Length: 108
Image (cartoon, rainbow, N blue to C red):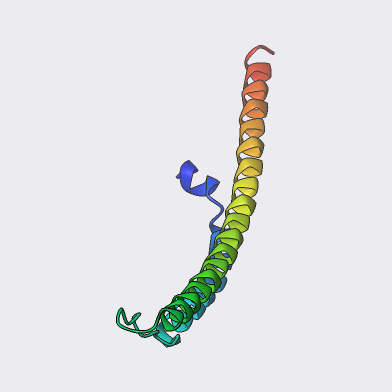
């Protein structure tokens, strides 16, 4: 039970709606984006280069969106880790104080 108390469930539960909304936005983006036609190997070279350039631009925009999402997730994890560390140190200091109080009570 002590391990469950050390996990910042309150923070995790508060962050869940934002995670769900972001996941839905990403799903909607990827499911509704227009599909590009495959590059025709028999087409003119300039047409092929234009098609490849469009695909590259789409991949770069997708990479930017993924990088933003990963950055947001890292910030959330950092905040959770910070709060967990504070809880750990407060718990440890409480344990040490209680041990000290027990020693004082035992040797008085």
